[in-house]
Image (cartoon, rainbow, N blue to C red; front, side, top):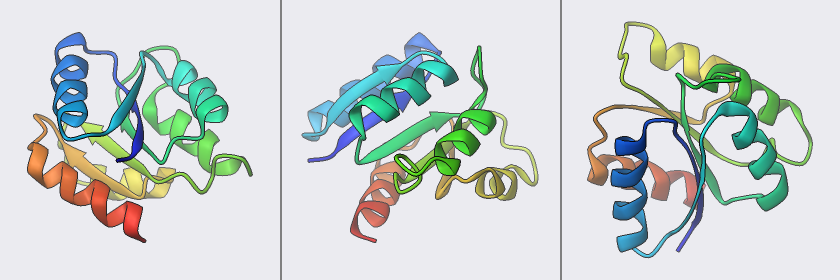
Length: 121
């Protein structure tokens, strides 16, 4: 079981992902925007963060960069999530500090594989 911080502003995506992760035994905390994601990551120090890249207040690119630049949170693996699968987004997410990247709609088995791989490394 992992403690997962899900940073997602879309209610349907948030509900679907959190239910599926909880069903598989994970503990899920939700943040609705990038700043709330940063604040909750600092407070909770989750095992992994699932970060939507298109967020209000602070987008996922900025939030990820900030988390990776701080000593207390830089070790937390982050998987960037985006519905806008444009050429170069994977590279941009990695450059921002994401440890991996996945596209929406999320294929849960693929995402779980990425979560497991990052938690084992």
